[in-house]
Length: 119
Figure (cartoon, rainbow, N blue to C red):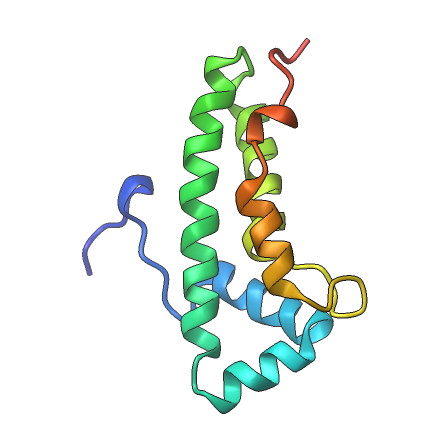
């Protein structure tokens, strides 16, 4: 089995990050899960979410280090932001229109929510 490194991580249905997405979605977005399952797309969507979160996490982490954060703090902040954007989606009660949520997220400027320095 080839060794995975952080710059070339590939997710599959058994990856913990993918399983976290599926479990969260089952609890908070059951209608979405039912639609994805009916179309045979649940695992594919969860893999895409985990991949997008990982890629955002990497770029945000680098940006935060450039802003003066130490690497562990940058990783934690970047991980939290990325997970909220792609994996830990809001509930169907709180945000029935996921498309509108995703549009708002994509238009949001990350610089607005990140302070310039850690201290």
